Amino acid sequence: MIRDILHALRPACLMLVTLALITGLAYPALVTGLAQALFPHQAGGSLIVENGRTVGSKLIGQQFAAPGHFWGRPSATSPQPYNAAASGGSNLGPTNPAQLKNVAERAEALRAAHGDGPVPAELVTASASGLDPHISPAAALYQAPRVAKERGLDEAAVRQLVARRTEDRQLGLLGEERVNVLLLNRDLEGLALDSQAAKAQNAAKP
Image 1 (spheres, one colour):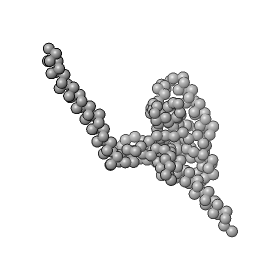
Image 2 (cartoon, one colour):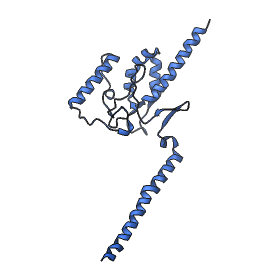
Image 3 (spheres, rainbow, N blue to C red):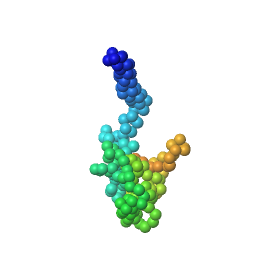
Image 4 (cartoon, helix red, strand yellow):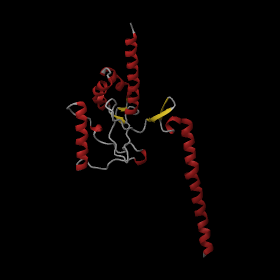
């Protein structure tokens, strides 16, 4: 009887080891190798590198609190916002008292910075992942007057930055138009430097 059991277990164990090697080693190695060869930027995390320094990823939002920056969506991750190791939402329903309190406080802070009026929904609610790097073009344009004022820039130039950074729907069908906040703020830094250089050049003219 033991011999029969061992005889039955042998092919099962062999199948287990074979599938473990295929699905646990060979397949992941093949997929990773192809990704690195065909899409090295995406496979590496879509990192943004400036002057040899990594400033972030296109796929993960960052916390921007300075009034001279565009602000992204709130993040519910802990212990800090946009923590990729703890991706997730707050799991609070739309009628939850804590959620209503959070939304009201965020809306009040936004109105204090931008004046009375409708507040874009994504600026007061976190995404399901807590890592969303995008906001809508409307949410970016909502912030343009404040950013331009804080930076001493022409508002029309800031609005043009938003227009240039607006991404279309994927394949023209999926999702909505969106703006990557990190990339927009990097463009903003460049615009501010150009503006300062132009002012200094004009001041140096006789």
